[in-house]
Image (cartoon, rainbow, N blue to C red):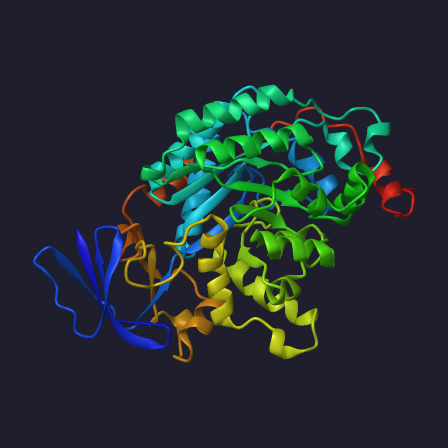
Length: 463
């Protein structure tokens, strides 16, 4: 069915917007519907392009709100001490991540997917199926590594091995099978080559990911300099910065997105800008883990494309994209006294929509214009959380907008219609998640890295 959105507000104007098939077909005054067109009264509504949740880890849903305040390297030890043990949990976690993204205005999610040991391909298939059933556009990015966990911290090769790492060839073969069985752009599911990061991946694995990405025209994704420990590690491993090393490998390009980018140096930012790469800003997890504040204002001034991600639901601890956009724009007022550099609501919206699409190599998403793919979100302006009427963009992104998404289309298909999901039933999701109350069974904790971490980071010894 086609749609005509009558008298909607966007870009500080009120007009009509027509959706024909999967595209925006017309924008103007008093557009006339065809007999096949459903007319939607857009008065008291605000239209925005679909947002992109450009970095997440769906399986962390099962540890939401649970892990104590810890820096990333020690937080990970807690995360992996509680395994997800079946594929139903994978499906439900992806479903919840997708639904939380949709109801906070996102039409696309990048899932840097944690894989179940021994069920790696099945994990990818289960998550992809959940996103396909829900109808959200998903870039499924299997989180892979081939280096043991102890080597992710400076000096870690001198301590006993922590965790088992698969052979590089095994990982590369898994990624090829994931492409063969799950990559389906026509259905809104794309596989992304996504090595964990320099802290847990060999050069051979990065090169293998580059090869598959080039052969199958895929995006690249990775964590980058999330913590100061990773900055130290890059110097220890390569004798240069992580960005300089990855650039020499050929990993930095226009379809490469890097999560975090907190500990970037000026030359790193220059390289990212020159190569057209994207940095995904994850403000809430950066605060939660004490990782630092990414130099977003500096990156933007120097031409780096910046997008927004929620990160995983155990380091955030949610998937509210509007919340991430709010914190991700306001946070940087503390980093630059010149208020003319601060991010406006309109700029924040651009980062979360067009910026996210650009990081995925999508020139057809992220803006409201004729010919663009119809990823659109229609928000209620008459909800109490959006009143009184001031600036709709500011109220939506900087206010306390709650459950205001009235309609949402992904490629012209209505996934939310008059506030209700048209695909999977959120009530069913709630009941299925409740069945897992008390599911956790602790396995043997991984060896304690805390004394070594405190030593290499210059912290006082534990008493």
